[in-house]
Image (cartoon, rainbow, N blue to C red; front, side, top):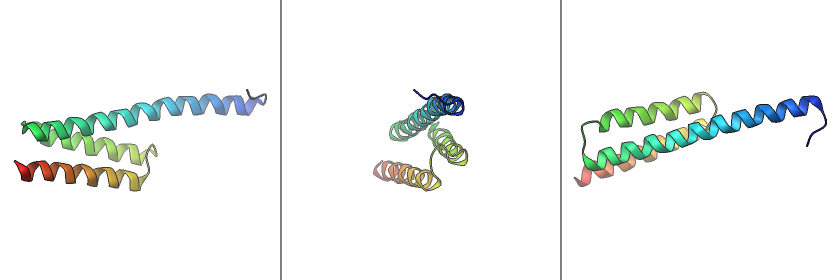
Length: 89
């Protein structure tokens, strides 16, 4: 445990950020999974689910929770999966 006052505060800040970042990353995974399952089932809300997933990825990248390149990779991978699902059906 840190003895220095500023380091104690820094540890508190880091813990708050870690919990927030973890929640955001979890939400991204959930939105991507929802978009993929909606596309596989061919439901009407698949476009909205895709839009929500991409929006959440972009927001996380803008706030620095994931890197810009990581956001681009995730969106690219998501689009490839959805196009593959759309082509097969």
